[in-house]
Amino acid sequence: MSLATAFFAIIRRDLLLALRRRSEIANPLFFFVLVITLFPLGVGAKPHLLQAIAPGIIWVSALLAAMLSLDSLFRSDFDDGSLEQMLLSPHPVSILILGKVFAHWLVTGLPLLLIAPLLAVFLGMPNESLGVLLLTLLLGTPVLSLIGAIGVALTVGLRRGGMILSLLVLPLYVPVLIFASNAVEMAAGGLPISAQINILIAMLLMALVLAPWPTAAALKMSVS
Amino acid sequence: MIDNHTLQAQNLSCIRDDRVLFSGLDFTLKNNQVLLLEGKNGSGKTSLLRILCGFREPDAGEVRWCGEPIESVQYRIDMAYVGHLDGIKKELTVLENLTVSLALAQVGTHNIQAALARVQLAGFDDVPAQALSAGQKRRLSLARLLITHNALWILDEPFTALDKQGIALIEHLMAEHCDQGGMIVLSSHHDLNLPTTDVQRIHLA
Image (cartoon, rainbow over all chains, first blue to last red; front, side, top):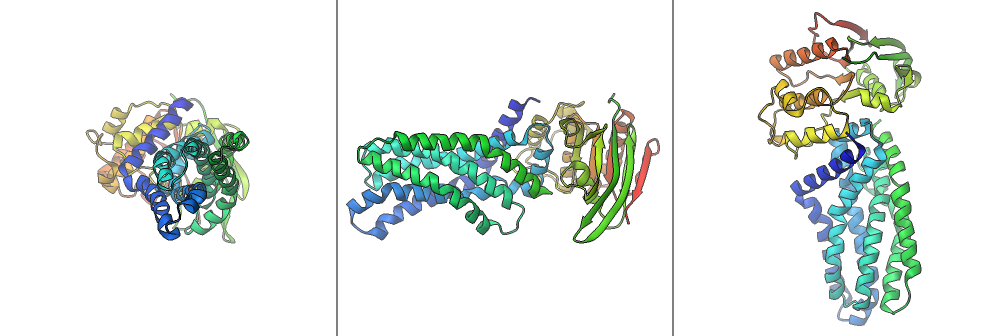
C-alpha cells in the first residue's frame, strides 16, 4: 500500500487505541488542570501576582503534562511487538513515526490547547494575551511531542527509563518554554511579539523535519 | 509464482555477553526451501533470526538477499516476520489489526476475509484481540503472512500455543507457501512434518 495509506492507518490506529484506553487522554489533561488550579491556593489572594506569573504557570504545567504523557508514545507498541512490525515495513520509518507523534499530539496536546483559555481566565490573564497563549501552545506543544519522541525512543528499551527520559528531554524543552512564555508576557503588556512567534515557528519546522530521523534510529537501537 | 530469490549468509557470528553463540555460519536458501534452526534454549536461534530480520547486527559476516545487503528496501518488501511477540494490539478487533498490517506492507495473495478463513478465524472479525485465546492470537499473527506480499517468512517458534490441529494447519500453509516458490526460515522444537518440501537443518550448539 502507498505511504499515505500507511501514514493515515497509523494515525487512525493510534486514535482508536486512545479512544479505547481513555485514561491515557485524561491523565495529562487532569494533571494540567490540577496544577493550575492549585497555584492560586498556594499563592494566596494576590490577583496581581497571579496575573503576572500566569503565562509561566500555564506553560510550565503544559510542559510537565506533555512530559508525563510521553512514555505512552511507544511503550505499548514496544511491549507487544507492533514496533518490530513497524520497523520491518518497507515504508520510511520516520514518516510512520511522524504519524504516531501527530496522533499522540492530537490525544495529549490538543486537549491542553482547548482547556487553556478557561484556565487563563481563571488566573486573571488579560484578554489581549489569550490569543497569543493559544498560538504559542499551538506552535509549542507539537515541538514538545517531537523532541520528546527522541527521548522516549532512546529509553523505551530500559526498564526504568523515566528519570533518564526527563534528564534527556527537559534541557531541550527549555528554549520552547522561554520563548513561549515570554511571548505571552509581552502580549499582555501590549508589546510586539513577532520575533518570539517566528522563533517558535522555526523550532516547529525544524523539529518536524529533523526529529523523526533520530527517533527512527533510536527505535532501531531499542529493539535490537 | 514468486520470482527467484536467494538468502545468503556468509561467515555469520554472534557474541552475546562475552559468549560466542555461533561463528562461521554459512547457508544459502533458495526458492521452495525451508531452513529449520534447531538447538537447545539459549543456543542463539532467536538471535540468528533477529540478525536475519536486520534488528541486530552480526558480530562478523553478512547476510545478503539476492546479492544485495539486507538493509535494502526490497528485502523489507519481500520479508515477513512473526516473532515471540505477536505484534497484535489487544484493544483492536481482529479486522482492525489486519487492516493496519496490510497498510504497512504490500498487498498479498489473500484478502483479509480469505486469510481469516484459512487460519480458521472466520467470523471473528469484530472480536477484540484480547478476547482471543493464545492459540487464536498466534493464528491471527500468522494470518498476517497471508494478506501481505512476501517471499521469505521468518518465524520464531511458530507452533507455540497451537493445538495439534493448529500445527497441522500451519504446516499446510508453510508447504503451500514453499510450493508457490516461497522460502521459510524458522526455529522450532516441534518436529516438522513437511514431507514434500526441501528442508535444510542447522543445529546450533
